[in-house]
Image 1 (cartoon, rainbow, N blue to C red):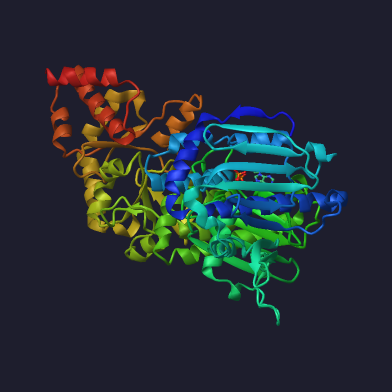
Image 2 (tube, rainbow, N blue to C red):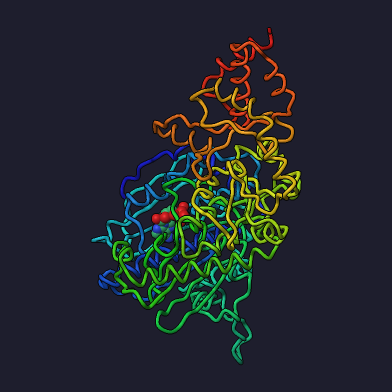
Length: 633
Ligand code: ADP
């Protein structure tokens, strides 16, 4: 061995190791899944490279993974003849958690072992799971790209903060992961135990997985002594990629296990769909909806996309081109004969086939969600991915109606902040006289519920959808109707109530307009340019005033804040002030004969309305001053 060097793990890694060992205690055998997955990935990668460079395979063209327990030395070795690693690769891939997410992970750690172990899955610390059962791990490797056996690598660690690595001659490509099994974990040296676990984790893998096992032979005739035990490698899986098999013959557990192999998630998926399509565009897709959102779902660098296979050969990970952005939570793979084996990301981007596949796969996912929406699990889905799906109706015009059907909202129909009302529910409850769908966007459920804009609609028994997610404003600003029913914000100046208002009511309103003409004129004069107009309100019952904007023109407070935060200079919005002239506050204000004092009252009424609408004021100090002056008389 050449001089080996000692390196330190990142401190985060050490922390993770402890966490891993503790949190996965009850499910130790997962280390086998991780190591078999890594071996199979290394083989996939080499297979792909060998398409253009067959020399890489040298005299070892048959890919396989081998597992061998050695009871005498207390080791378990997982070997593959895949791509292998150079010294640099071993140092950087095994010695650090190369993922940019380490820090984020540590931030997300909750201290709750179960939750944290689920998180670990998302960070793919696969290789480190070795230390659950091993007190030392030795890795031997030779990269398929190596020029000579001298470029072989040895990497070693006891998982306690440091590792050593260096070059060592190795005459064949690929990697051996040698686990020095802890005394307490010797069950993993037993053939039956290994066979059981390996079968579970390798059934769906497309390369043969072979286990070194004792072969039992009946003693030969005439021989009294049993023959010395013979060992041989025996294939334990059928080495057929799961998605190439007939869906009818695949058990749910197999789909779930494959999902874990694919994603390194530790939980089962919520649902999956496996489809084989023949005809003009041939492809097989296997799509999964995870149970839990990744920590970086809203991070711009969030890696997503499907695994791409061409004619069963792995081509690339995270091919984002096959699904729209609003479905970025979908995991899985697509395997097609319609793309060339040498397809690159750039080519994918421009390919007609990609576009067709994207269209078809999008439909599949929407279909899958439609089915899921009929089950209780949809609640889980919605809580994890609802806000992402809300990007859909704007991003994907052609599927707008189908996506709108999948959205869920809170509503005034019941007293719950849970978003579980669909537009279909809403429309089915609409009284015949109601023509539009009413909604309110606010900063939170609580502030939506208390909004003065709901007063009249509540009294009329009109249901209002309540929204407070950041994306809602943008969504509602971009969709105008569902099933032929117009969306109307309850803050619109004209609620287009139509038949919901009877003649008597309209007459009463006309009269009120006439009756309170003078109050309105007084306010208008006192506020001058600050407001666009002052009107008698028809929507208020308990509140003295509110602000509205001409239909469609209103930029909501939340949107304004977002744009201002992004550095945009926006002109002051001029609202229409609506008054509830019978409200004691307006009556009191109007009783003030002193012109200057009345101005203060008008200002108070206006600022109050703004505050109730927007949750904050441009100049709170001025408001307080007005308020104080009135309180002190
Ligand atoms: P992940 O598999 O999620 O990337 P791991 O910690 O399991 O995370 O592995 C880290 C990296 O180490 C892999 O991405 C790969 O580059 C390398 N690696 C692990 N096992 C092997 C192997 N058997 N052959 C080649 N490279 C490997």
